[in-house]
Length: 292
Image (cartoon, rainbow, N blue to C red; front, side, top):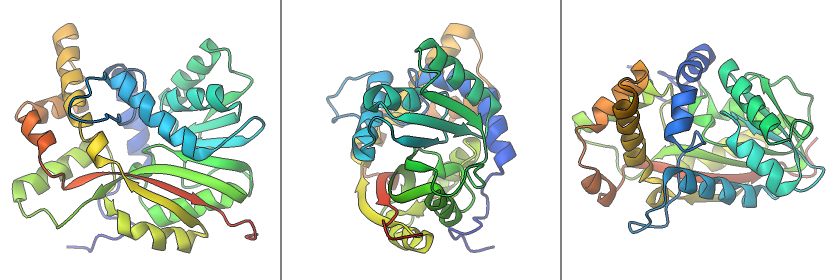
Protein backbone atom coordinates (compact mmCIF):
# COMPACT_ATOMS: atom_id res chain seq x y z
CA UNK A 1 0.00 0.00 0.00
CA UNK A 2 1.54 3.38 -0.96
CA UNK A 3 2.50 5.79 1.79
CA UNK A 4 0.23 8.82 2.07
CA UNK A 5 2.15 12.08 1.80
CA UNK A 6 1.35 15.68 0.98
CA UNK A 7 2.99 15.42 -2.44
CA UNK A 8 0.98 13.45 -4.93
CA UNK A 9 -1.48 12.12 -2.38
CA UNK A 10 -2.83 8.67 -3.21
CA UNK A 11 -6.60 8.81 -3.50
CA UNK A 12 -6.63 12.51 -4.36
CA UNK A 13 -9.29 13.48 -6.92
CA UNK A 14 -8.59 14.80 -10.40
CA UNK A 15 -9.59 18.37 -11.28
CA UNK A 16 -12.13 16.93 -13.71
CA UNK A 17 -13.74 14.85 -10.96
CA UNK A 18 -13.98 17.87 -8.65
CA UNK A 19 -15.49 20.02 -11.38
CA UNK A 20 -18.04 17.38 -12.32
CA UNK A 21 -19.03 16.92 -8.67
CA UNK A 22 -19.80 20.61 -8.21
CA UNK A 23 -21.47 20.92 -11.60
CA UNK A 24 -23.86 18.18 -10.50
CA UNK A 25 -24.40 19.30 -6.91
CA UNK A 26 -23.66 23.00 -6.44
CA UNK A 27 -27.25 24.27 -6.54
CA UNK A 28 -28.46 21.83 -3.89
CA UNK A 29 -25.35 22.30 -1.73
CA UNK A 30 -25.79 26.07 -1.82
CA UNK A 31 -29.45 25.67 -0.83
CA UNK A 32 -28.61 23.29 2.04
CA UNK A 33 -25.79 25.55 3.30
CA UNK A 34 -27.98 28.63 3.28
CA UNK A 35 -26.26 30.41 0.41
CA UNK A 36 -22.68 29.28 1.03
CA UNK A 37 -20.69 26.16 0.18
CA UNK A 38 -18.51 25.92 3.27
CA UNK A 39 -18.56 24.98 6.95
CA UNK A 40 -20.31 27.05 9.57
CA UNK A 41 -18.94 28.51 12.80
CA UNK A 42 -21.11 28.10 15.90
CA UNK A 43 -20.31 29.76 19.21
CA UNK A 44 -21.01 26.64 21.25
CA UNK A 45 -23.54 23.89 21.99
CA UNK A 46 -26.26 26.41 22.88
CA UNK A 47 -25.86 28.41 19.67
CA UNK A 48 -29.03 27.90 17.63
CA UNK A 49 -27.80 29.81 14.57
CA UNK A 50 -28.97 28.43 11.26
CA UNK A 51 -26.50 27.27 8.62
CA UNK A 52 -26.58 30.57 6.73
CA UNK A 53 -25.73 32.62 9.83
CA UNK A 54 -22.98 30.24 10.93
CA UNK A 55 -21.52 30.16 7.42
CA UNK A 56 -21.45 33.94 7.15
CA UNK A 57 -19.83 34.11 10.59
CA UNK A 58 -16.94 31.94 9.38
CA UNK A 59 -16.66 34.00 6.19
CA UNK A 60 -16.36 37.15 8.29
CA UNK A 61 -13.65 35.59 10.47
CA UNK A 62 -11.58 34.89 7.37
CA UNK A 63 -12.27 38.31 5.83
CA UNK A 64 -11.02 39.98 9.04
CA UNK A 65 -7.78 37.99 8.84
CA UNK A 66 -7.28 38.76 5.14
CA UNK A 67 -7.04 42.53 5.87
CA UNK A 68 -7.95 43.50 2.31
CA UNK A 69 -8.98 47.06 1.58
CA UNK A 70 -10.19 49.32 -1.24
CA UNK A 71 -8.09 48.94 -4.35
CA UNK A 72 -6.55 45.62 -3.32
CA UNK A 73 -6.63 42.72 -5.76
CA UNK A 74 -7.83 39.52 -4.05
CA UNK A 75 -7.94 36.00 -5.45
CA UNK A 76 -10.79 33.82 -4.18
CA UNK A 77 -9.28 30.38 -4.85
CA UNK A 78 -12.13 27.88 -5.14
CA UNK A 79 -14.92 30.44 -5.20
CA UNK A 80 -17.90 28.07 -5.14
CA UNK A 81 -21.10 29.84 -6.07
CA UNK A 82 -19.69 33.21 -5.04
CA UNK A 83 -20.93 33.80 -1.51
CA UNK A 84 -17.61 34.61 0.21
CA UNK A 85 -16.21 36.53 -2.78
CA UNK A 86 -19.23 38.81 -2.98
CA UNK A 87 -19.29 39.28 0.80
CA UNK A 88 -15.56 40.09 0.78
CA UNK A 89 -15.97 42.69 -1.96
CA UNK A 90 -18.84 44.40 -0.16
CA UNK A 91 -17.04 44.40 3.21
CA UNK A 92 -13.60 45.50 2.04
CA UNK A 93 -13.98 47.41 -1.21
CA UNK A 94 -11.34 45.15 -2.75
CA UNK A 95 -11.48 43.88 -6.32
CA UNK A 96 -12.09 40.12 -6.24
CA UNK A 97 -11.25 37.50 -8.83
CA UNK A 98 -12.81 34.14 -8.03
CA UNK A 99 -11.80 30.89 -9.71
CA UNK A 100 -13.34 27.44 -9.74
CA UNK A 101 -12.73 24.23 -11.67
CA UNK A 102 -16.53 23.97 -12.02
CA UNK A 103 -18.13 25.82 -14.92
CA UNK A 104 -21.43 25.61 -13.06
CA UNK A 105 -19.91 27.36 -10.05
CA UNK A 106 -18.54 30.14 -12.22
CA UNK A 107 -21.92 30.71 -13.88
CA UNK A 108 -23.82 30.83 -10.59
CA UNK A 109 -21.20 33.02 -8.92
CA UNK A 110 -21.24 35.46 -11.83
CA UNK A 111 -25.02 35.69 -11.65
CA UNK A 112 -24.77 36.42 -7.92
CA UNK A 113 -22.26 39.22 -8.45
CA UNK A 114 -24.45 40.73 -11.17
CA UNK A 115 -27.54 40.53 -8.94
CA UNK A 116 -25.62 42.39 -6.22
CA UNK A 117 -24.54 45.07 -8.67
CA UNK A 118 -20.88 44.10 -8.29
CA UNK A 119 -20.00 42.94 -11.80
CA UNK A 120 -17.44 45.73 -12.11
CA UNK A 121 -15.73 44.76 -8.85
CA UNK A 122 -16.03 40.98 -8.76
CA UNK A 123 -15.38 38.52 -11.56
CA UNK A 124 -15.40 34.73 -11.65
CA UNK A 125 -13.37 32.57 -14.00
CA UNK A 126 -12.88 28.90 -14.82
CA UNK A 127 -9.36 27.88 -13.77
CA UNK A 128 -7.29 25.11 -12.19
CA UNK A 129 -5.93 26.11 -8.78
CA UNK A 130 -2.78 24.08 -9.45
CA UNK A 131 -2.01 25.99 -12.65
CA UNK A 132 -3.40 29.50 -12.36
CA UNK A 133 -3.62 31.66 -15.52
CA UNK A 134 -2.20 34.75 -13.82
CA UNK A 135 1.18 36.45 -13.89
CA UNK A 136 3.55 36.32 -10.96
CA UNK A 137 2.71 38.75 -8.14
CA UNK A 138 -0.80 39.51 -9.43
CA UNK A 139 -2.66 39.64 -6.10
CA UNK A 140 -2.42 41.41 -2.76
CA UNK A 141 -4.21 38.59 -0.96
CA UNK A 142 -5.53 35.07 -1.54
CA UNK A 143 -8.55 33.51 0.16
CA UNK A 144 -8.68 29.70 -0.09
CA UNK A 145 -11.92 28.68 1.62
CA UNK A 146 -11.99 24.88 1.93
CA UNK A 147 -10.53 24.60 -1.57
CA UNK A 148 -7.16 23.09 -0.70
CA UNK A 149 -9.02 19.99 0.53
CA UNK A 150 -9.70 19.11 -3.13
CA UNK A 151 -6.14 19.55 -4.39
CA UNK A 152 -3.80 16.58 -4.94
CA UNK A 153 -0.63 18.25 -3.63
CA UNK A 154 -0.84 20.83 -0.84
CA UNK A 155 2.80 21.80 -1.19
CA UNK A 156 2.47 22.51 -4.92
CA UNK A 157 -0.78 24.39 -4.32
CA UNK A 158 0.88 26.64 -1.74
CA UNK A 159 3.78 27.27 -4.12
CA UNK A 160 1.35 28.33 -6.85
CA UNK A 161 -0.40 30.64 -4.39
CA UNK A 162 2.96 32.12 -3.39
CA UNK A 163 3.76 32.70 -7.07
CA UNK A 164 0.70 34.87 -7.68
CA UNK A 165 0.98 36.73 -4.36
CA UNK A 166 2.77 40.07 -4.32
CA UNK A 167 5.64 40.46 -1.82
CA UNK A 168 4.01 41.12 1.54
CA UNK A 169 0.76 39.57 0.29
CA UNK A 170 -1.41 37.58 2.64
CA UNK A 171 -2.98 34.10 2.40
CA UNK A 172 -5.90 32.92 4.51
CA UNK A 173 -7.16 29.36 4.11
CA UNK A 174 -9.14 26.67 5.86
CA UNK A 175 -8.28 22.97 5.70
CA UNK A 176 -9.58 19.71 7.07
CA UNK A 177 -7.04 17.96 9.30
CA UNK A 178 -6.55 14.82 11.32
CA UNK A 179 -6.36 15.49 15.05
CA UNK A 180 -4.90 13.42 17.88
CA UNK A 181 -3.92 9.75 17.56
CA UNK A 182 -4.70 7.78 14.42
CA UNK A 183 -8.26 6.43 14.43
CA UNK A 184 -8.17 2.78 15.53
CA UNK A 185 -11.80 1.97 14.77
CA UNK A 186 -11.84 0.38 11.30
CA UNK A 187 -15.50 1.29 10.75
CA UNK A 188 -14.81 4.97 11.51
CA UNK A 189 -11.72 4.98 9.27
CA UNK A 190 -13.75 3.57 6.41
CA UNK A 191 -16.55 6.09 7.01
CA UNK A 192 -14.11 9.00 6.87
CA UNK A 193 -12.51 7.64 3.69
CA UNK A 194 -15.93 7.20 2.09
CA UNK A 195 -17.01 10.72 3.02
CA UNK A 196 -13.81 12.21 1.58
CA UNK A 197 -14.37 10.23 -1.60
CA UNK A 198 -17.97 11.44 -1.93
CA UNK A 199 -16.83 15.06 -1.60
CA UNK A 200 -13.91 14.47 -4.01
CA UNK A 201 -11.51 15.52 -1.25
CA UNK A 202 -7.89 14.51 -0.87
CA UNK A 203 -6.66 12.63 2.22
CA UNK A 204 -6.30 14.94 5.18
CA UNK A 205 -3.04 16.29 6.53
CA UNK A 206 -2.24 17.50 10.06
CA UNK A 207 -1.88 21.04 11.34
CA UNK A 208 1.72 20.28 12.28
CA UNK A 209 2.59 19.82 8.60
CA UNK A 210 1.79 23.39 7.62
CA UNK A 211 4.95 25.21 8.76
CA UNK A 212 7.09 22.92 6.62
CA UNK A 213 4.73 23.07 3.66
CA UNK A 214 4.58 26.86 3.83
CA UNK A 215 8.35 27.26 4.19
CA UNK A 216 8.99 25.04 1.15
CA UNK A 217 6.52 27.17 -0.84
CA UNK A 218 8.19 30.45 0.14
CA UNK A 219 5.53 31.50 2.64
CA UNK A 220 5.76 32.43 6.32
CA UNK A 221 3.10 31.17 8.74
CA UNK A 222 1.46 33.84 10.88
CA UNK A 223 -1.29 31.78 12.48
CA UNK A 224 -2.62 28.24 12.70
CA UNK A 225 -5.85 28.01 14.71
CA UNK A 226 -7.89 24.89 15.27
CA UNK A 227 -11.59 25.85 15.08
CA UNK A 228 -13.02 22.33 15.27
CA UNK A 229 -14.99 23.03 18.45
CA UNK A 230 -16.91 25.67 16.49
CA UNK A 231 -17.22 23.91 13.12
CA UNK A 232 -18.04 20.38 14.33
CA UNK A 233 -21.78 21.12 14.18
CA UNK A 234 -21.57 21.43 10.39
CA UNK A 235 -22.02 17.72 9.69
CA UNK A 236 -25.32 17.61 11.60
CA UNK A 237 -26.58 20.62 9.65
CA UNK A 238 -25.58 19.02 6.35
CA UNK A 239 -27.52 15.90 7.27
CA UNK A 240 -30.55 17.96 8.33
CA UNK A 241 -30.35 19.88 5.07
CA UNK A 242 -30.29 16.74 2.95
CA UNK A 243 -33.19 15.34 4.96
CA UNK A 244 -35.26 18.49 4.50
CA UNK A 245 -34.49 18.64 0.78
CA UNK A 246 -35.50 15.02 0.38
CA UNK A 247 -38.76 15.61 2.22
CA UNK A 248 -39.51 18.70 0.12
CA UNK A 249 -38.58 17.41 -3.32
CA UNK A 250 -38.60 13.64 -2.97
CA UNK A 251 -35.07 13.14 -4.28
CA UNK A 252 -31.43 14.14 -3.93
CA UNK A 253 -28.51 14.04 -6.39
CA UNK A 254 -26.77 10.65 -5.99
CA UNK A 255 -23.72 11.94 -4.10
CA UNK A 256 -25.86 13.87 -1.62
CA UNK A 257 -28.16 10.87 -1.26
CA UNK A 258 -25.12 8.88 -0.10
CA UNK A 259 -24.29 11.59 2.44
CA UNK A 260 -27.87 11.52 3.69
CA UNK A 261 -27.81 7.72 4.00
CA UNK A 262 -24.60 7.80 6.05
CA UNK A 263 -25.96 10.51 8.34
CA UNK A 264 -29.16 8.63 9.05
CA UNK A 265 -27.21 6.21 11.25
CA UNK A 266 -25.43 8.85 13.34
CA UNK A 267 -26.43 9.97 16.83
CA UNK A 268 -25.69 13.64 16.22
CA UNK A 269 -25.87 14.72 19.85
CA UNK A 270 -23.30 12.05 20.71
CA UNK A 271 -21.19 12.98 17.69
CA UNK A 272 -20.91 16.67 18.58
CA UNK A 273 -20.24 15.91 22.25
CA UNK A 274 -17.37 13.53 21.47
CA UNK A 275 -13.72 14.42 20.97
CA UNK A 276 -13.26 14.97 17.24
CA UNK A 277 -10.63 12.83 15.51
CA UNK A 278 -10.61 15.22 12.56
CA UNK A 279 -11.55 18.85 12.20
CA UNK A 280 -10.76 22.24 10.70
CA UNK A 281 -7.97 24.78 10.95
CA UNK A 282 -7.49 28.36 9.81
CA UNK A 283 -4.04 29.06 8.38
CA UNK A 284 -2.76 32.60 7.84
CA UNK A 285 0.51 33.15 6.01
CA UNK A 286 2.29 35.81 3.98
CA UNK A 287 4.85 36.10 1.23
CA UNK A 288 7.94 37.81 2.68
CA UNK A 289 8.41 41.34 1.33
CA UNK A 290 11.98 40.60 0.19
CA UNK A 291 11.01 37.53 -1.86
CA UNK A 292 11.31 38.00 -5.61
